[in-house]
Image (cartoon, rainbow over all chains, first blue to last red; front, side, top):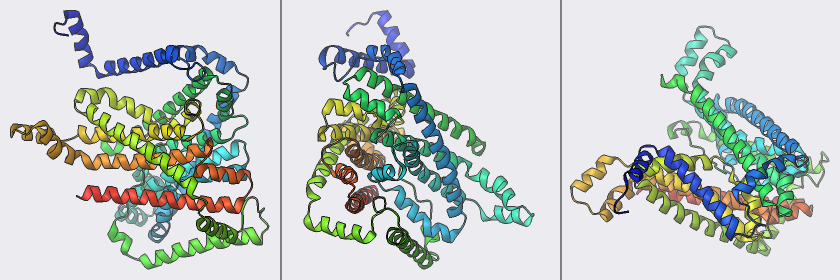
Length: 263
Length: 264
């Protein structure tokens, strides 16, 4: 491109000034590449072009059971997330507030957190059955550890003088928790909730993909075995969008509640 | 599949006070867990298909180690891990470096990569199986894809946040491209890249065992599922212990390497 026309130059200029526009171009290019590859170069039994995937979305939702399966998966995610946060908060406070308990059990928590939990996935199915309970349980064990770790870390940098001060002014246990401990651990607690969300997503989806009778795992298997990549990609796309939205919500909440620190 | 490892907020000085007592509590906890397990399996009549006797598990573990029957599965899993990590490490560091060469490309790509990183990529496993079959190829492809993102994101962060002053100073003293890279950019970015590589390794291991569990013909994850379907609980528990020990050892080795690399 030795001599660029003024028009070309202005296009390049507006791209150079707006990275998000260039990002959209990159995304569009990726989709175009996918479309071309799927249309002319790859076996249609293995990959569908994005245009077909979008067109088949209503067929995916029309498949009997799919809306219910998405609902069920969302339900499993919600229950697992709430349980992980509540259990993690309680355990984190129990471990973090007592120095001896913390020194004894926090290393155990870190060790468990570092273990590849997917090795015990078959056990969860044996213990909790192939229904929703095993997915929720597996999601909880993935989500609970980051909450414990961040709550312990958040409680830890609490200045003892604040506790002593509150106590000497006659604050009850609940008041100390509500007005001293809680505001202090809010930033790290929400960071923990964000990690818990990605953990819960991973745990629930792993268990779903492993074995499922009514959840989305059942349908991903069905579409795979039927060599129906358009529907498979449509369903996966919906789930990926769901994951992005859930992660974004938690991140937004984290930024919102951590604000008082910065001020 | 992102699992950022927990930082250790406890300072060393604090940890040393009263250490014997906490060690004692830890030992007591471990003994209590094994004891409850033993009693539950032998006395309290918990179904053997749910909870095998720990003694039987121990015997099976010894048998597995002695007979060497794990070698084939271990080779499969470690081979997949090595291939996946090699692909993602080389691809992630190279592409990350190329993107980080201009502020503009960082602005373009970083949010995009971060958004993809927040999707549980394990979702795409059925697609990988369609494409690459049930053999090792689908595990390598999935493991490489999942571990690619922490590596490239950290590489961009490492190279992208080098103090511009250093670069300008080196340039004004006449450093060549190579010397700038070797003596300024690389030393500044190296610790962050190492962190990315460690995270990539951990996630690669996790996703390979995971995909072996979900759909495969061989490997350690497949062995555990196979034993679970055969209801050979004691042997399955023994394999779980074996796999966890290997994973924890590998992760510890990688963390050690990371710490050593950062010190130099």
